[in-house]
Length: 367
Image (cartoon, rainbow, N blue to C red; front, side, top):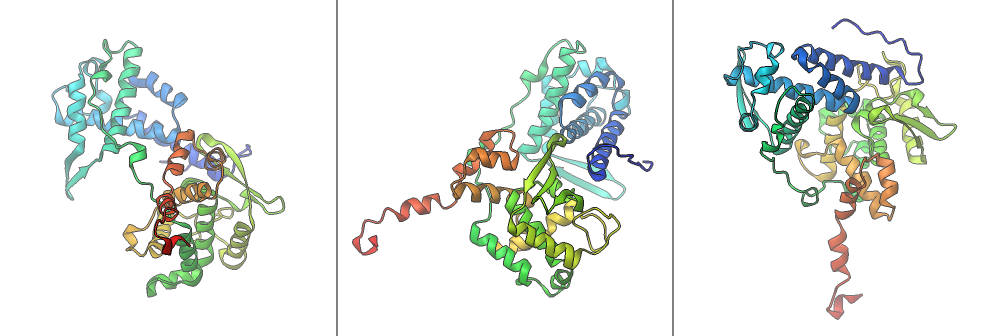
């Protein structure tokens, strides 16, 4: 792909625009690999689906068409681009169900060896959703005669309320911040990196647990995102929505320490959180750092540490346990639906303990 140069005359930071442009480029590249009779479908996705979801749909559809070529006799095409509309119209619901079953575990042989891939029910449900959107559109547009999506096998997912939400308790948050402040629990090699990144890492962790930011929102923060005089900073959320967040004293303290004592100059002048190479930190680097310090707080191995998304859950549960309105928490975390926020209210980790503690019947324990 040739170099993309952004000529920015909008209010959005250059890195935000670049991210949007790169997503668009990825989608357009995928569309060129798919049949031309799907152009109307591509326009539908562009106008109705978030960019990341659009990219996921296109990848799923390309994979399905590749499956038709490699694993079935439903098409004579050699590449997805060559599949004809009549061939896609001949696909039935049982064919899609066989595809979903195939996706549970499949193998791909390359020169490097044999790769085994497996998908859980959540991944299968997304693939089913992608194909449902495709075939419903084809039916609506008259490219197929029957809406076959009613015959797709359901993918059984656990109810949201049945799944325990993983989040740090307040004392574990303090252990995590102690670890990043003092270097406790780190191996000798980890401590070498800690000496160079402790202020940066602490600032990241404090922002995560204070604001419940998504990892993409934190990664894209710039120095220019912050107005310390006004006590606020800007983030860009889903659909490119710009939101102002207030700064509290803890956030100001850890950010100033990082900027003044450690950040230095990097290759990307405005990027807030820099790697040791002076470039904007990647999501993977942030994720691995978070797992390291949450593992110390939890007393587990590094692999069992929590992801940034679980720090987002930590923010939600901690705010709700402090008696804050779930509607206010929904607004802070930018949940599309209040039922998402209600899940955190329903999973107060200490609720059972508090209830039972107040139900002592033996007089010697009543005090």
